[in-house]
Image (cartoon, rainbow, N blue to C red; front, top):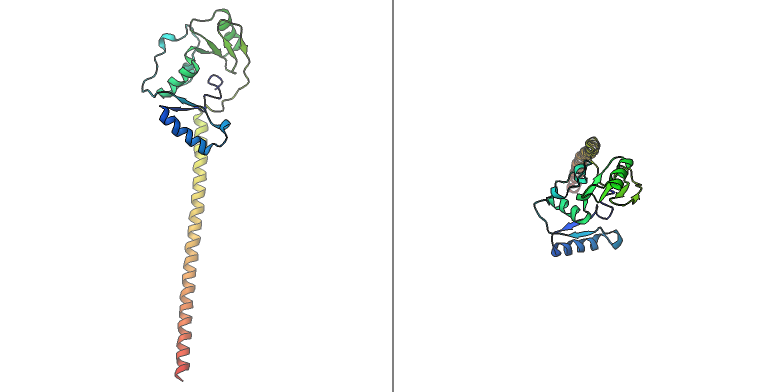
Length: 201
């Protein structure tokens, strides 16, 4: 997340200007504050990912795409065009990152990030300490997702049970009202019969 930045993560991708204008109208309609609207990137959608094998940094350290799996070719290409992640190394420890990037920068390595979000630039001593320890957007936890789905399932079952109980109550109430209505009809019929008898006398 630190690599991609808070502007690129929630961004939308559009194939052409026509799609961009449609999305812009939707955002203007539903997101009333312009400062809250996400970035819209216009880039032609392609079915094939860029071939970045020839620009991979000459290093035994993993790159961004060694750590982050991206199966969508459009997103893959946009990330490269917008952020240049093909030249970013992901190094767990900051001391190792400083040695790799500041002392003998590998060919093709532009930046490096540590596990805690520290940012280092190749060929210089520039270093920015990271402040984000936990992911807020990109997460992959099978156990967490299973627990979330189970919780949603339990909530749905509870709501269904309540609906069934309400349906049963209404059915019983309808039956009770129907019986009362029949009793009223019988009483009305008896009263009408008594009135007719009195008139006949």
